[in-house]
Length: 303
View 1: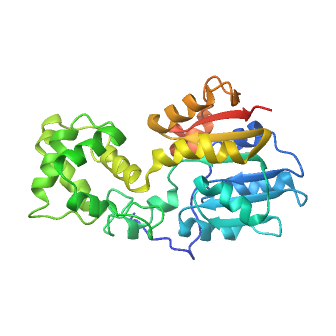
View 2: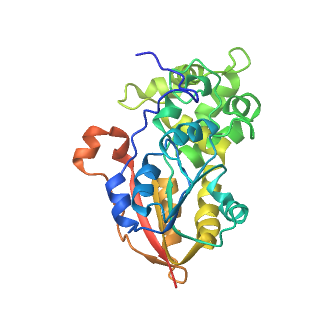
View 3: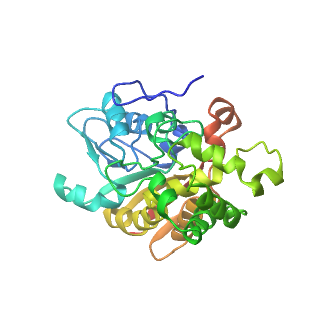
């Protein structure tokens, strides 16, 4: 099947992960003020809004304007507020809305299926669109720019720190050498370049696409994802929660999960409600393969 470019007018295909578990762990009830800091296609928000009811309020944030367009089709009403913003900027959003605090916050840090299927931004391995990888295409440098201008040492650092790629040095040096004759402009270009690297060819066949870690590393780098996670949890979310409020975070790789786990261990600030992360049931994993790597952690802000 050829990848498609959803755009703002297409129907969202993303299936929210750990939906039942999120609703249970957030202990939602009518009248609460809830934030979905990564609203995406609105799957989690739609169900949370049903529980908090007309007396509650729900604020949905997203850095990606395309995903806000999807969310606006499934969640709306006088008590629903959608904003093009990062969850890091939540305190400013609350000031704009005249709110002083919220009761619940959800952060789903995964990449949406709709983003993956948008060929115009290069998220997919076979995408023939520009290798952008930014959640907000109007901010910062694209992944193609990073690959075009970064030094081998800089690329090695990105691949190592954000992709945990064991062949980072060899890949970085090969991509810098290759770009002089064959610039990397699309997702398909990057996938092909990684596959052609001698260090990758020497390893032989693997069930996992060898470009997986490189795509992850570049996406994290251009979106400053780990900085957002660290600041978003330890500062923005904490400062915005009312005492006794709950924060739920869904992560999809070890780098994010480590940050969340370490923050929730701070007993001066949080009561950690999940000693071990909650994972998807076997049934959900069969129905939605993206959920296989999802981990949910929940903590309560100390009173």
